[in-house]
Amino acid sequence: MQQSQDELAVEFVESITIDNRLYKYDIAGSIAHAQMLSEQKLITKSEFQEIKKALTEISEEIDAGKFKFKTEFEDIHMVVENALIKKTGDVGKKLHTGRSRNDQVCLDMRLWMRDEIAILIQLIVDLQKALVKLAQKQGQIVMPGYTHLQRAQPILAGHGVLVFAEQLQRDKERLNDLLDRVNVSPLGSGALAGSSLGLDRQRTAEILGFAGVTRNSIDSISDRDFCVEFIFCNSMIATHLSRLAEDWIIYMSQEFSFITIADAYVTGSSMMPQKKNPDMLELIRGKCSQQYGNLMAMLAMIKGQPLAYNRDMQEDKKQLFDSSDTIEACLAMTTAIVANTTFNKKEIAKDLDKGFLDATALAEYLVRKGVPFRQAHQIVGKIVNQCEDQNIALSELELDKYQKVCDKIESDVFDSLSPENVVKNYNVEGSAGLDQLNQQLEFWKDELK
Ligand code: ARG
Image 1 (tube, rainbow, N blue to C red):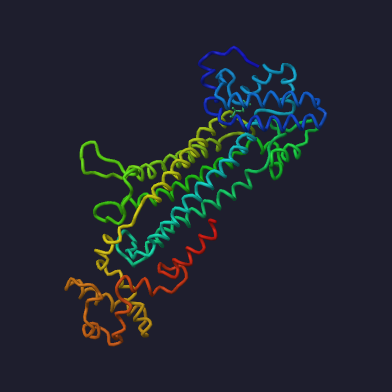
Image 2 (cartoon, helix red, strand yellow):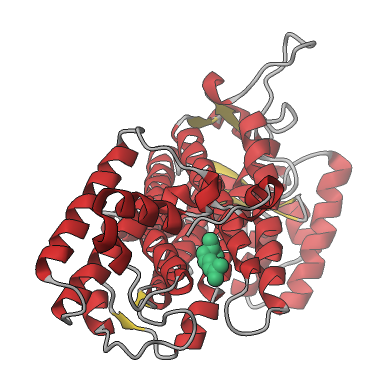
């Protein structure tokens, strides 16, 4: 198996330094394959037992860190097989019957990804729980909502926090959806054309817990769509985390002072002693670009390849592993930050009367009094101008001044003014008010239990 190669070429072609993390999956796949070979009488039962025992030992040696991954054996498949042959001689040489590294690597990645998806979903759930907890604890604080980063309408803080739980819910659904496409066995597709050895593909799929087998041997070993999808899923998660990071970087600036993040999750400056910098959030935002890079690299790797297998594909694992490692770290860090962040109720309340957050509510009040909305919009514009001139909030303007602009306005107008009242008056499903917050919290309690 081992050829004398120029050292430069050995280093260039190897992937063991990257794919060694697949060893458990490679070994599980090999044991299942050997079992099927014995059931099909392609090897004997005792040969299967010998192979299984040796592979289990190899797995334990790798677990214990006693195993040396030699680059001359190229990749995890060859490294494990060589170790097996070293232990079992000619018996081990039978393992590769009806199999190619081409279907083997696809199998390993699918097995790996199944587990990785479960890990990511758990990390997402952890983050969602932290968000819900924050929304439960401080969600009733009234704060400004923004569009174009300009004060727009009042919202409850919890409503803003739960946005991220919604985004993550879709991310979770995407991963679960991907799982259906990942969870089929390519084993038995061989190098590209299958085999004449009467392999039982359903059986290996069953042993390995797959929902079924792939239909077309060439497609089986050429397909890396699931890798693209996986990195896309992670890119989308990273995008969502990046948006949270950006919001909170703004919120923790002195100019906003909406939130305080615990000292462990902010950093000082080497020069300016007073500084608290949101470096962790900035890194979450920054690492997002790495996901996009991986996604582009993965797509570009596939696009020009002729069917079926080409060595280009070996590069897929760099992107895959980097993508999953990075997103795991970002999810865990975001969860820690969310669990250690407090909204500053007093600071938020201080400027709540700035920016006419209740202007839209005033227009809606006029609508309820029978004024067409476009006209109401104009009327409120005039009133806002007056208040701006006097440097007062809408709730501070006297009733007679209101009535001079519009005679439909009565003393009950004040129930519709002030951010606190506005938030109480939201009565449409999914709005930013208290009833709707409680409904959302109910949903999440049930969903995340
Ligand atoms: N290390 C290779 C990969 O990751 C395994 C398949 C190699 N196949 C081949 N025909 N050279 O893609």
